[in-house]
Each structure stands twice: as C-alpha cells, then as structure tokens.
Image (cartoon, rainbow, N blue to C red):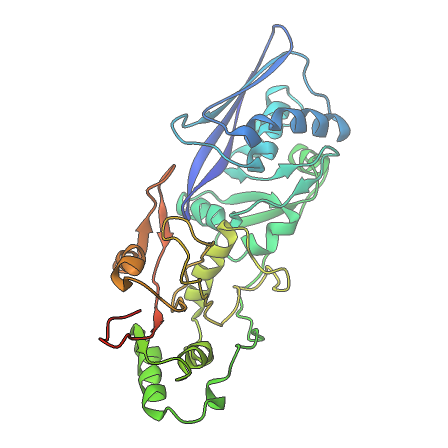
Length: 350
C-alpha cells in the first residue's frame, strides 16, 4: 500500500515542499530511505522503528521503501522522522489516509515516541500558507512559534501515539491560536548614547545615519572615542516594526538560535540585533552572523577596507543574498555598517 505525507525542506530562508512517499509491500523485511537524504535522515530508520514500537503501534515486518521527493533536493536534518512514521502507519493501515490530506507534518522522534524540536518551523509554516495548505502538525515545543503565521491551523504534537489517536478520531487535539507581539524588554546596550560626553559633531552624524540607515565610517587616532560611540549606537536605532521583527525571527528560527529567554509566542524583540565581528574574521568563513532588517554593527576594520566589505556590500543591494553553496536559496541581507579605522601618517586607512 502507498501513502504520501507532505513535509518541508529549508533552502536558505525559504521552504520547499517535500512529498514523503511510503510504500509497504510483501518481501523480505527491510527499510530503505531514498531521495538524496543526508546522514541524519538515513538514521531516521532506527528512530522511526523504535518510536513506532514504543508508542504502542506495530511496525510492519515487510519491505518498506521511503522516497523523499523531489529527489534532486538535498534532505537534511531529523525533521522527516514524524512524516516518515505517519507514512508507515498509513501505508500499513493503522491510521486513515484521509486524515493526512491537506496537512504538512514536521518533527523529530525520540525512541520513546515523543516529538522533539526542529529548526526553521516559521518558514515552514509560511510555505504552507503560500501553498494553501490549511493544517500543520508541528512539535508542541515549536507550536507557539508556528502560530505566528496566520491562516494556518497549527496542531501541537506531544508524541506519536497522540497524533495517531487524533488521526484515527479517538482523540481531538485543539489547534493553537496566538497573536504575534513584540517584546519591549530588550537586553540593555553596552553603552547608552546619552552617556557619551562631547563629540557633538560625531553624535549628530550618527543620529542622522541611524535615522536614515546610512553606513558610517569613523576614522581617528586611538583614544578618540570611536569604539565607545560604536557601542552606544544600538541604543538610538529605531525599533523594528512587526513585519521586520517577524523577518528577524525567521532568520533566528532557521539558524536555530532563538533566545531561550524569549517566548516563542512573540515575534522576537523590538530591538535591532547588532553584531561586532572581529576585524581578523575571514570573509568566506568567519563567525556565524545573523542578518537583520535595520542594521549589522561591524567592529574595527583593518587592512584593505573594500576587500573586507565587498561580500556583504553586494548583499545589501536587493535585500536578499543568493546562497552559492549547497542547495542555494536566499538569505535575508539588509546590512547596515559602522566601520572604525585609524589613519596612518599619510591617511591610508589602517
């Protein structure tokens, strides 16, 4: 018997629909996953078998073939555990196929059948909304984050047995509904702009730059106050709108870096995230940076200034940067830069 469950893959900051096709036929017992899976997806065979048995359900001792279509798209991460398990149960007649129609499923399975957190839930639900998929089954821990997207019915799932009972009609799991909000209790900046004394002409220039999102280059001798002013700059940046905060939350969701102290029911925070990469960071690698609508505060820039910024300068032209590695996709890129430099005696930037 053949069953198909809709799931999702992450490409950059966008999602792509994945059809989890499961076929259970007679033959020697085997469990094969095809469709360009990575190691985590291939290991789902062990997790799914153990989770199905420990949830009080029966795993078929037959030939099980799982195809993750389209096969040309690389499948990464454990988010396919739950749709694979549901496909196996539907193909073996343990849950009705009708309950899976018009629904997208994501989630990682523990060996005891409980459903764990997966990264990138927010762009997945946004994809379901664009594709007119009315229902989304997500891990309960990620349900409040998923509910930020309107017009999609979000069903929080605690474990596999609960979901099987819900699809079979023995249990009803209520949909979660919430309204996106902005958190105003932001982390304090390193330095408050009002605490800076003197440097009135520089402070005026920074106020204009912050209001119009203009890039800044501060050049001066050591001890002139460049670093102090740069650290105080985030305290005067305009607060994010709700749409911008949702974009920031989407970036953090894909990177799996949503702060634990911020409830997932909120659209992240009203403050503009800023970062100060070290001036010796390599452009191709470097540390993990998160783009944000409104600004990306960069630290001291030594050496050839154009060479350091060429990669991120192009990204800010259209608001998105195409990813050249792996699957491609788009990354949100609207950076705003504040560079610090000291001149040499001939006024070459150092």
